[in-house]
Each structure stands twice: as C-alpha cells, then as structure tokens.
Length: 433
Image (tube, rainbow, N blue to C red; front, side):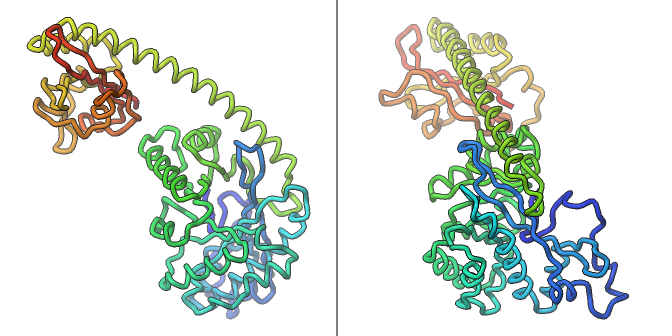
C-alpha cells in the first residue's frame, strides 16, 4: 500500500492510532504539539528491490509518530494536517527528515548500503524556504553524502513551480537523486516529469493492485514504462503485495519494486537484510522461471497464429475476390480465437464487410465500438503499413483495444493473392482478454 511519505502505513501496527477526535475536546496542548516538542517520532524503513539485479537498492523512510503520554501510534496524515493548519509544516518536515537521516546513518556504513529514499514535503517551498541549505546541512550532520540520498517529491501541490525546479537543480548539482512519487493516483505529477527530470518514477499502488488481470492498468503501466525509458527514468512499482503483482509489474518493465511482498516497514533494528535477501532471491528465481515459461508459451502461440494464418490464406487464395465473403463465413467458424475477419486491398481499403464471430453477433454496438464496414480506410493502421513496401508477409500487432468490440485484441495480417493474381491483405482480430 502506498503510504504518505512520511506517511501512514497499512498494517504497520496492530494498535489503534490516535485520531483527531481522541484529543481535540480534551487537551489544550494537542498531541501533535507534544510530538513536535518532545520529538516522539520514530522512523521505519521499507525495502526497495531490483529482481533483475537481485539486490536491495534502497529503503524508504516512513514516519511513525506516537503520543508521548499514552504511547499509542498517531497517524502521520493527521499530524501533517495539524501542522498545515498551524503553520508548523516546515518544522514537522525537518523533524521527519532529521530522524530519517539519523536512523539511516548506521546502515550507510554497511557493504553495498542501500540508498535512502527521503521524502520532501514540497509544499514548504511556497513558504520561502528555498536556499536555506537545511537539507544539505542535515545530510552532512548525519555523516552522510548527497549521493546516498534519493529525494522523493510527493503529491502535494506546489504553487511556486519555479521554486521547485530550482530546488531540484540546486540539490542535483550537489549529488542528490530525485524520485517523483504517486504517479497514477490523486494529483497528477505527469506535468512535473519534464520539469524535474527525476531519476525514478514511482507508480502508485492504485495502478498496481490487481494489475495481473486488468488489461487497462497494464497498458497504462506500459505507457509509463515507455515514458520512463524515453526520459531516462527508472520505474518503481509501489505497493506490490502478491506474487502475481510482482511478476506482472516486472514483466511490463518495472526496474524496481516495493511493497509488503518483500517486507513491511520496520524499525532499523528489526529490518533483516538477510531475510529480505532470501525473499528477494526466491522471487527473482521464480520470476526467471516464469519468464522462461512465458517465452516458450509465446513461441507456441506465435507458431499457432502462423499456422492458422497460413491455413486461412490458403483457403482465401483459392477463391476469387467475389467469393471472399462466403469463404470468410466458413473461416470465422473454424477457430474460437477469431473475433473478426476482413480483407484489404493493396491500398489499405477494406473490400469486404467485417465478418464477426457468433459470440459477437449478439453484442449491442455503440457509436464508439463497432466493426469496420466495406470501404473503410486502414492505410494508417500498423497491421497494414507494416506489410507494404517490401515488409514481412505476416505481421502481428501488440495487444490493443479493439474498435470493433471494445475488448483487448491483436490483429494478424498477411499478404496474399487471389486465384486471379490480385494482391490483398487478410486481417484477423484475435481476442486476447
């Protein structure tokens, strides 16, 4: 589960957290003020791992404030909300940061020490703190160097975007790295990617949960991975909780993963790197085996598609153009995998009606999703232009949302000539849902 950085964590404690209703009416000096005055705030760490490298890349610092009198945990969200209402956000942010650096400092001296992912409440820049040097000084005071720190820019809205950009430029020049948090949830950080050029893009738990069975989430995730590749950012999937989520995110291109599957946030003295390593190696081994199995499966599916297309093309080639429709009617019944079948001419124009599988006949078409009709122009479609001008004879698209059915599909296309020698392209939409 994505947590407020320094923020609350799902399942982090079995005790009931203190919330506003517990103290507002009873205490003239709120719990929050006690926390700031007495610094009753601990830091827990959650590992960030790379399956490809089989390595713990970093740890994220998560605040765990407590009521100094009762000893009960307090929710960081409520604590930051109180600080915002009372003009104490800067003080609280600096306290959390100092505590995190102090807790991480002993870890930094270990061999292959993980990076510290340190959250920065970027809204404080609207309060004129740019240029204070507090961040750099806190790192030095903890005996650390900037290249050990990844500053996470969280989801808070910042009015002064120029100040945020300048903050990043100043600290990047000193050696700090940057991560942009919570992509895919709440306030969109997409506009900040080009502005801040972060080294890491963190995709929120809301995009990761159940991703193994959600085509739309998978496509959005792949788009963010592609964006990261183009702008030079690593992709970190937050909140992975199941083996299927880990496997799918890594398959889709995630460089790093973080979540309960590899470890819940824990105090430094309870964070067992050896145990995390064991879990990581087990997950990496399973991922490697699954990757091999998927590769074999893809090859089998490719062979199946090629064989299917070759058989269908042979049938179509033996028919003259006027007889395509009746041949197509027979072909669409020959395989349950076929959703639609249609034929294009050499210019990419559809020369037949789209013949659909019986399972689609009862589907109510909409103005967005309906089969293409005779005369439709497909010349701008990937499955057409990939074949023309000396391209391959057979082509298969990546999965995409079919405009014929509104479901995920792949289009198989193949060049052929009818018995009169006229060139055509046979197209099949294969359901991949």
